[in-house]
Picture 1 (cartoon, rainbow, N blue to C red):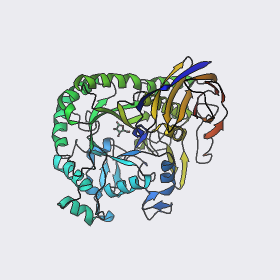
Picture 2 (cartoon, rainbow, N blue to C red):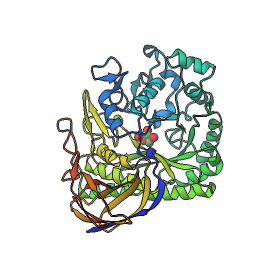
Picture 3 (cartoon, protein in one colour):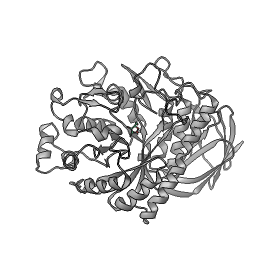
Picture 4 (cartoon, rainbow, N blue to C red):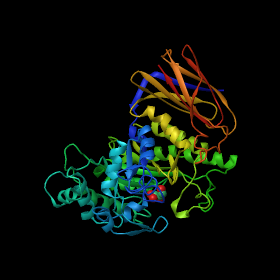
Length: 481
Ligand code: AHR
């Protein structure tokens, strides 16, 4: 039996809704076939965007979308993706399968997608193989409303009004696929490139994100913060949950042992140490704690599904992924006074995706349902909470007088009777939903899309205590009035 204590009188910071953000990359079938099918497709779409996928993402209130990469970002030349589609330049997507990218999804299409989703835009610029001028003109093209060649070009391509760019990333993984740079070199390049990312509109102050480290590379953060800290609003960090040390044999998404399960959990929980370490070094150079940590890539990374193109990184998604999602989101919530945004990789058809598609069919993954539950935490006030004993994780928050508690029991095969003590509150009403499926390998398929889904759940409340029986490998959302 585990215990959770929540101090309902101790409201901490607001949990930024953008912690529940997403990442779309030109990788495999994320964009093409996943989010975008083109206007001529038989698959129902609005201006080329899949209606089923857009509706599913709207339902979880997707707050922000990062694009176009990832490694793809540092070989993407935005001018190739505007204008008449048949005339757009074709390129080789060298990182992801060597396929031909026809650039039919470009800047205008991205903002059309954000508009349909009702989310903010996080655009990642090309520092690795692009020029300062190219990056500067992209920002001008997207955000300038006055008279200039870039705004005229945008208008000629169909959009008189500029768009809002909430976040702009200055390169991606520049220590590897983004140019193999050393931290001091990147930091100087960052200073130069960011100079020309202008705020053309007083209502669109662009939040500039510097490329952060490769997981535990603390030197990178230390050096980049020292040289360039005062020129950025945020610095990124990437952490993938890979169950085995051998990248050539990570194991498959749906077939795994109990040992693989627990090593996955352990790897996912390492993110807390990374966050603490990077925040420590950021604070060393930024005493006011002005610069935010942006975890703009996270999620599980397994071997690609058998029979699929390895370079497309397509993987299934089980209750194990759901556990990784809820445990990771709990950690982001815990550090949400400094973690401003996080973006799961990748929204559709790639790594820890919330949606999978196959031609006209679509399934919501267990990870989707965790995001569905956790949406209650968006922009809510974090409450002080603690889990004692067992394999239990929790986030509690308060919004509009209601408390929302997300509880995870990540034990592989044992249920747990959990007692939740609410300091300072006797509930007037309690309701709950649960995600559970009997075993960690449970997942949804195109033939059985609702094997794993949310269901209403019974919890009991007496005085200041709520009791909930959590099955093995389950996550519940409890609403308290
Ligand atoms: O998500 C796949 C890749 O992982 C991204 O393109 C890159 O940034 C990271 O290495």
